[in-house]
Length: 450
Image 1 (tube, rainbow, N blue to C red):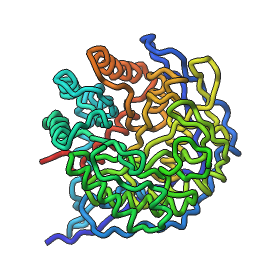
Image 2 (image 1 turned 60 degrees about the horizontal axis):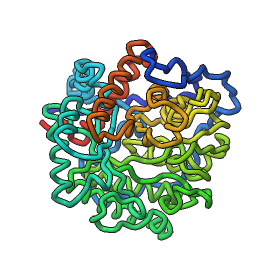
Image 3 (image 1 turned 45 degrees about the vertical axis):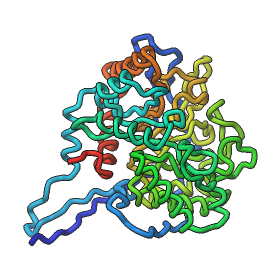
């Protein structure tokens, strides 16, 4: 019988930011308008980060533990290998077959894995498109869901399209309260009501019940919990979607809900990094600005995200918000003005802060790219190029597929991103890095079948 010892190789986080670049993203094909400019000289005073985030929240205790709820490797960026009785013999690297899969994929197949489109009508044309391109996931809205039977048939059809490839993420916004896409489901409480009770068990049970229902319907990703701290009473979009104006309460309740979802076999996605709670405008309709310093973010907005990462978060969604006091990068908007990029498109936010400083190595997904914060200021392809170069792994709703015109547009979108790679405006290594993260997460939750 073999004795196993665990070898843990811990990563060392960067002490200071590296200067990000957001340049050369305009495609030579002429399909985009607007361009991304060079990064300005970095101001160290804007990017210094303290060694730790002051979070006193403790992870909520799960009532039960399943294989799907195991702590993600992203929690401490560690790699584990098993050793047999012979200390010179290592068992096969569990990630080797993922790297082999990525190596065998075409560039277009890899790019498709990074996309999460929406669709207005499910018909044979959309089904054929997804069977051909194999997107990494899809997102469902209320208009896609007519009844319990219809929803189960739809998700079964989506899963069948993958064939011998990993199944796609089938995602939804089912937060509870005012954001519930499944209209015939149980009415789940608002996050603010759960936070007011201060019960981690209640938040865990809420996440577990939501997760069990989603799992029954074949949905495997929930864009929840909201980890934003409701620190601005004038916020038009977060409000009672947040657990509290206290970052430690948000941490405790959010982690408990995340663990409930995970224990039901559903991937939880923490949102909206690095925090949407202190805005006075809605990123669905305009580009919000948060003028806080890094020191201020460390005390409030970043506390729940750091706690969630330490508790094993698998996926995090970005916010389309400008942070001019911590981001030195500049981009050229459609109007020709040099502006601070939204967090989604900022390497200083996604790679330097989220990845290196906070230690997250899970899947990063954008908020919807059709939102006016992005689409009102950048072409889709430029926004995509900057987001991927920033370190984002998945692109949410680059378009809504509804007819032959949008089917063609989706194919062109993948082709245009491939052109950016071949032109050297996005490195293929950057693509491979994202696809490996996506496939590792799918493997963790059993999307590979046999």
